[in-house]
Length: 88
Image (cartoon, rainbow, N blue to C red):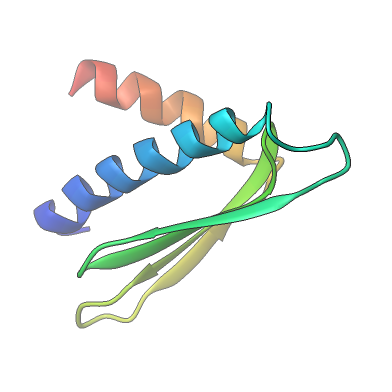
């Protein structure tokens, strides 16, 4: 990632995780949700249940990269992310 993409990813991922956590009290147990956040550089989508969701990423600039993390992999990613941000 470029520095600008990294900064946007940090900001948008924080927004999405906060939104998904906030939705936990608004949804019924069996109800899932999809939330999107984007900037000029990238797009993120969290989809699933507030406590168990997947994440998709699309980079807009130049490379046209796309990736995703499954709901089972995301907790480890978020834990690593928190550790990285704490030590950044």
